[in-house]
Length: 346
Image (cartoon, rainbow, N blue to C red; front, side, top):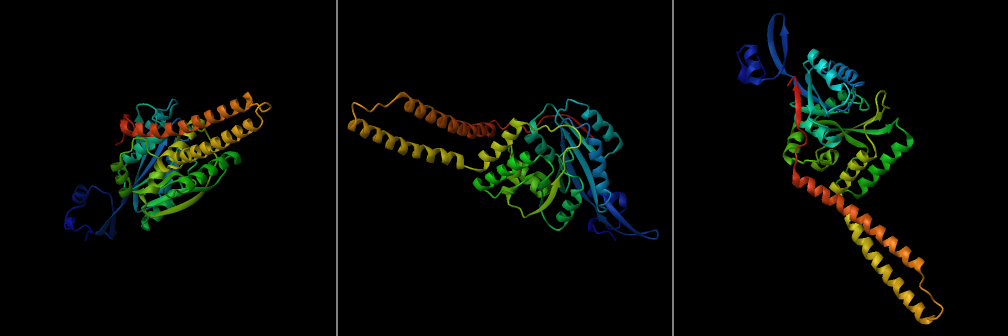
């Protein structure tokens, strides 16, 4: 008998038509005993100028799913308007493998918006997000799926070790440690967004409809019971990193302004402290001038130093306030995460 009561005494073709899912068919001799549904897992990998990596990426993910007998998969590669031949390679891969699905964006929507748009296009019961530069090893999928089957709605990939440069790794570590201390919610250190997310999690993200989301912060804010999978991040073998100072600053400030009001409160506290300090200095200068009227000179140096110090402090905190105002503007504009130019195999 079938495990789907609505499909009793029907032909397998009718079962598939009704449920629109893949099944494991269990036979004994030539008789069909029962069938069990196979879970669909979606893998989303954002791409930008990754022509050197996508072929190996697709092959390694295919090899991983060959070891998971009770799951089928779709591999969605969302290209952010690459300027090399990444799109041509993706088209060729999609022709030979129907599990490979391709989304090509109209333009480069950045490393924050495009990956989230890709997640929202997935159809799986669980959705996996991996980088296309192979620095998130596809073999982690086995551990992701195993923990998902155990009941975890969120499985986070956390790089507790890295083969990148010592200086760069420690700068990242300092940022994550600092943000974790000042954030309003508990954030996971060294978690960059890669991992597995149950369909229910993605549906909540869809309802939030954030036009410029700090994805790793949103996942922590939702509060689902999560499992952390630690891994050692390998160095990039081919191609060049697309991150630069601006993109790193962008994601860094996005995390701060979305999940902490500490900078604004520091501006208030620092302004109050400076006001008290200025009042004390003014009183000291006044007393010294009264006592030593003829000999005591205020001097231009102290005035200029004080002026430039206060000006720099003001500019710094105006910049902080500007970041918060800019975030509000982005939310009010509510522009789409990405606009697609082409879809393949959907």
